[in-house]
Image 1 (cartoon, protein in one colour):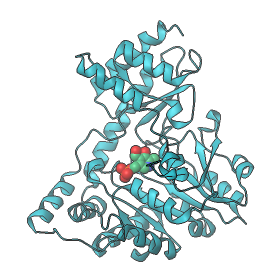
Image 2 (cartoon, rainbow, N blue to C red):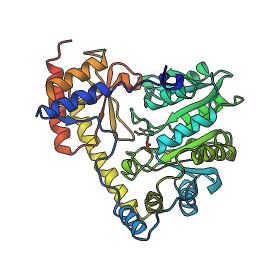
Image 3 (cartoon, rainbow, N blue to C red):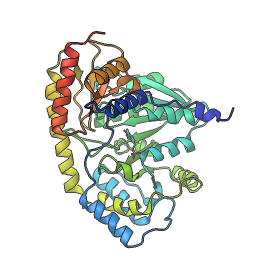
Image 4 (cartoon, helix red, strand yellow):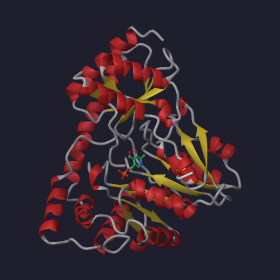
Length: 390
Ligand SMILES: Cc1ncc(COP(=O)(O)O)c(C=O)c1O
């Protein structure tokens, strides 16, 4: 066998089939509308671009400190204090090449073979795959639509064991857009009291919220502060997906030291230019542009919800954050891959099947698309749904 056991534990994305089909339709000249994007369709803020250009022209080309330049780590610490009420010092922070990279490395330094990682589902597909790759056991904890697909303390207790190493929380959630309220987080914290479980709190969609209040998990209690690792990044908040910059902060400095060791032997520092640009994304200079993007997203969300709500057989969950609407099509078809594949083949509209998030009977529609495409695409979904034959 050429390949390692480890890589065979990881599965390919279930949604690849959809991406491939969309590509084929495009190549055949068919009109395609993509609601499958996991990234903002906006440019990064002007101040970010200017800071990157200044860094290039200023010759900021060399390796940096592995965990990030001081100036950036201080900007992150300030941001966590100002926006989230969290007191982290720069030595508790590690900057990496995207939040995905931060998560991967956290799993690498925390998981021993057989450790359990609780992942409330529906969930972003990379969590279980990363957990398995590192020898962990992904415990998928099914949540309920009537609770906004948020795990409750009772549901958490039901899957908590003495092997639980990590509980993953994602708020605002990909794919549902749900946000955990302070009291919901507090209840989860109570459920964890007495256990050694850590929480990885993925807060990457924090800036894209629509009328709801966002609360950082670590800010809810001292106990939660000490057991939570706060993960964030600039991909979604500053439309910088391709720039690759993420970070985490952990109360226990041992975790930062371990990730620094791993990163020093693998990827070294996040791109030097992007680190300079990231400061501009965090220190207030980009706030107006970020707010403009948020407002555009909110308008599109409302537009999409209004149209989706009129379609018989579909039931959208109202997202409080992120840029996705998770839509139930259970009333007309249980199999999400079948539904999404047929939708794509017959109308050219690409969505992501719920099964890709471990949730059958739903599709995820991204509203990171312009208003005209949203209207046209949903009209196509409406006529497809009307004539649906399983
Ligand atoms: C929930 C969630 N976490 C993390 C990421 C990864 O972000 P990054 O681009 O910073 O690696 C994504 C991207 O799709 C995401 O949806």
